[in-house]
Amino acid sequence: MKEYISSHLRQVQERIQCACNRSGRDTHEVTLIAVSKTKPLEALQLAYDCGVRDFGENKVQEILQKAPQMPKDTRFHMIGHLQRNKVRQVLPFVTMIHSVDSLRLAEEIQQEAKRISKIVDILLEVNVAGEESKFGFSPEELINIIQQICNFSHIHVCGLMTIAPFVENPEQNRDVFKKLFQLYVDIKHKNIDNISMSVLSMGMTGDYEVAVEEGSTMIRVGTGIFGAR
Ligand SMILES: *Cc1c(COP(=O)(O)O)cnc(C)c1O
Image (cartoon, rainbow, N blue to C red):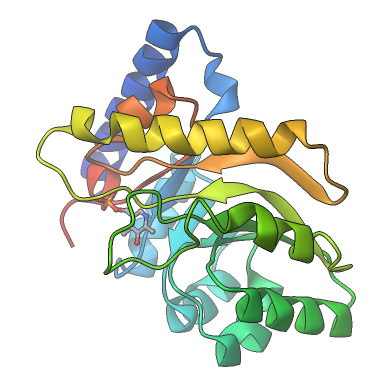
């Protein structure tokens, strides 16, 4: 498993480098999040030994199990749909919540964050392609939501996240990534208090190279590093 993870990780890093070169970006602008959901602790430890510090999980229970067993400088990103009644448990263990998909969830995070005197970094999930099956705000409602969340004292909105449709050819998602990047830039230019727009979380195993070319700053890669789930 060690060989598998280290060689796949190296391959992903090389591809990120090439995508950066093609699009005139600096590799340091792109953070690779190793999506370790369903994988055993050992897999995370091996990736850690290869230098990975950012891990993505989509279940609160898994974060609660894994986080206390990893070295202190490991960062866990919550990337899956988060239920409001799990916010209290997970908050102490996550560095960023990528999947804030409702105002009610943001309110719950605000309340809990205030209770434990923590400022929580979040991303707003956007359903760019308007898929029925997906969570996230529509591009149209986003600005209105931001104008409300910017008043939340213990939430810091760092940027946007999307899960692009499952497609055969990653080129089919280029327009989705372009659209999210445009939203990100438009919101950034509004200079709203408490809203940074410095993180753009888009791109997974099937399409991260295209996402990097279109301005992604965090890619979430599971299968490409750890193998099929
Ligand atoms: C599982 C998951 C990923 C990683 O998917 P892969 O195709 O295995 O790279 C990325 N983002 C989210 C939100 C996920 O749930």
